[in-house]
Amino acid sequence: MTWVVRGELSLENAERLTDSVDQWADQGGAELEPVASYFEQADKSFIMEIFTNKKPAPGMLSSLLQTAGLVDWDYHVIEMENKDWVAESQRLLHPVIAGRFFIHGQHDRLKVPENAVALEIEAGQAFGTGRHETTFLCLEHLENLHETIDPVRILDLGTGSGVLAMAAEKIWPNAAILASDIDPIAIEVSRDNLNLNGFSERPEGAKGAGIALKVMDGVQPSLLAQEGPFDLVIANILAGPLMSMASDIIAATRESGVILLSGILTEQAQAVIQAYQALGCTLHQHQKAGDWSALTLTCAAKVTEPVNAG
Ligand code: SAH
Image (cartoon, rainbow, N blue to C red; front, top):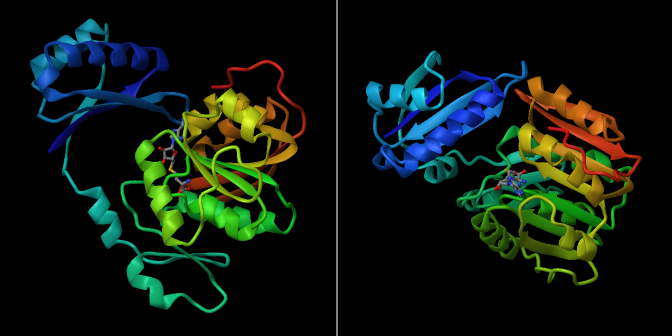
């Protein structure tokens, strides 16, 4: 079982509490293996979550909060069922149809409709089986972009299972695509999915079409020199990282290039749009599915100074 201590806080307090949880993890609370995380809401407040592997005693929590100077914090302790999320997502795997794309698991190989562009994805441990609205929205945007742009260099930042890089390669077979992820497991899973779908891996920096895979946190300057600037940057991550990486993402994009952002809760979309507009981008499309939004922007001016848009 996993327990979550959850409540609302300001950013400053969330940062302070995270520091206290880190200290707690090294000292008294070590056996609970506490992990802290927080995320921004539309009203700019933050939701703080502290995960533990055992139920935290009230005394433990109050001394933790005292260390952080947050004795009045209004929190709830929630017990979560431990699930094997990988197995779960594989069980729930139904084909996803987005535009011409038919994203399916192995068991649906025989159901591929005629004329569909099929991609076989095993969920593995990486996010991006196509079931999620955020991936679906990207596939739809890519289909729309097919009619208007012909990118030579594409970056799929946070590739997960490799699904969007492969979709982009199907749409623009001559493009040099770089699929990156901070998580080495995602890159391994993407490599397996590339093989499964008959794509060959392009060595990093090699000229010509194909998909290169790279473990990378955000956009690293060394890589830009080798692979960039990109005509199209796809990033299906989350509103927070998309805003804090805004200037890096724009710097990686060629002037007048296209940026496709996803993983954004609709209530956070305006903040993301503003962050990119403040850096000279123009919004072209805003599509929604369920609670999620995806944005297509073009970037007119180049950023000369990194700006902290977050
Ligand atoms: N592109 C896939 C997966 C999206 S999930 C799809 O559309 O389905 C988001 C992915 O971004 C995860 O695999 C996560 O590991 C990766 N990610 C998160 N932060 C990142 C960062 N700073 N740099 C690169 N990748 C990151």
